[in-house]
Length: 184
Image (cartoon, rainbow, N blue to C red; front, side, top):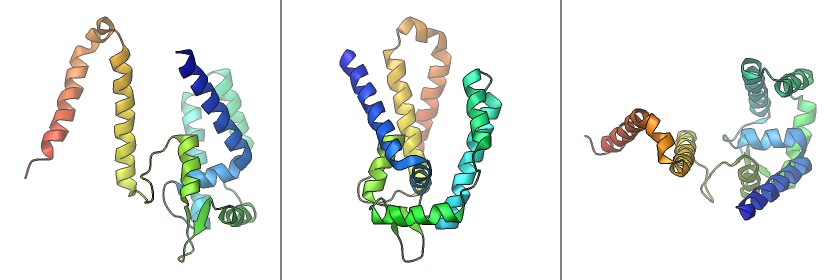
C-alpha cells in the first residue's frame, strides 16, 4: 500500500514539474489540440470555451472557501488569449517538437505532445494515429466505467447490497448495448 501511495505521490510531482516547464498557455494549447487539429483562431476559441466552462462549473458547485478563491482568481484572468501571445508560443512549440503545423495551417499534437498530454491529463490515444473524436469520447467513457467498476469490486459486499437494484439495472443496460452489436 505504501509503495502505491509513494508512486502516486511521485507521479503527482512529476506532473507538477512538467506543468511548470510548460506554463499556463502552453498547457492549454496542448489540451485543446488533444481534441483534434486546430488553427490559431480555433485554438483561442477553444481555450476561451474551456475557460468559460470551468468558470460555470465552479460558479454552480463552488460554495467552499477554496472554490470561491478559485473563482475569484479565474475572474481576473483573460478569458481569451491574444494573438500576440498565442502565435509566438505556437511557433516555439513547433520548434520544440510538441506540435506540428499542417499544410492547411492547422496545428496538431506530435507524439511527444500527446505523451505529455496523456501524462498530465490521463487521456488515452493509440500510438501513432489520431483517434476520431467520437471514438475518443467512447474510449474515455468506457475507461471511466472500468475505473468505477474496479472501485466497486473493492467495496465490501454488505455496503453494495443496498444498491443491488441499481447494479442490476446498470448490468442489464450494458448487456443490452452488447446484444445490440449482433442485431440486424
